[in-house]
Length: 324
Image (cartoon, rainbow, N blue to C red; front, side, top):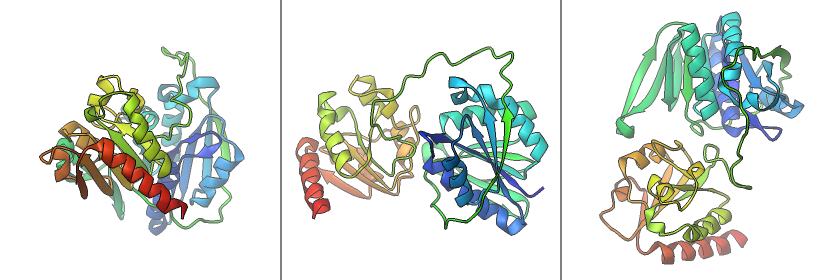
């Protein structure tokens, strides 16, 4: 069949933005082939999530019922995903490359012996031929790859697609029960991120700090700037290792890969590992007192100066501008 299956994520009763983007892209790919989009949702999905998927072009929503916290664990639902993929026989399976998406889809690919590509920044179809683009060598090279076989699994970075024109679809809803028998691991506790923290994977604007921040207390100036531009606070591995901020905020090869419209790097030298996590940002602004810092080679705009003078001044200017 020419249909496309996607794994959609939701939180707090709302569809994740990156899942909405994924649904629109799937509908775009399926349309020329006369296919439809089926979305798989794990855990209790309120009506608003189903309706949101319909507005994104989804014709059918399959809700995998999984009680309690195990719904947050890809291993617990991988069997149900495998059953759905085998039954639906989609042309391609798309998911966002988040911890949950990567966990669930990697297990499904292994169980079914399917070809899979991770960390992709684009996907296209030429008839039934599937092409993806993914960064290699820390983002220094973009490889264009054709995936053979069927179905094929593609994990895409968040925030790489735009939201499309909303549609007036009322998806068919089907419920299936996740088989949790024989699980060798269960979710006992979920430690939530700090209250009010914007998910880095969904953030359209990010203000990040590095070793140059000097202390945990100094991250307040970044939080102030992030608050003004309604963005998230990120950090380099050096800042996390120094104990300035929790790992939830880490951007880079060993943290989260982000793709915001605006990325402001403060006191970050620009190691290869950090660049691998943010170099695809649409606009990069670097603030560093070292004019030779590698981050400037990747920045669209660079400010050579003391971040403790530059960032508060930038915050004040933007606050006045946005309040006018």
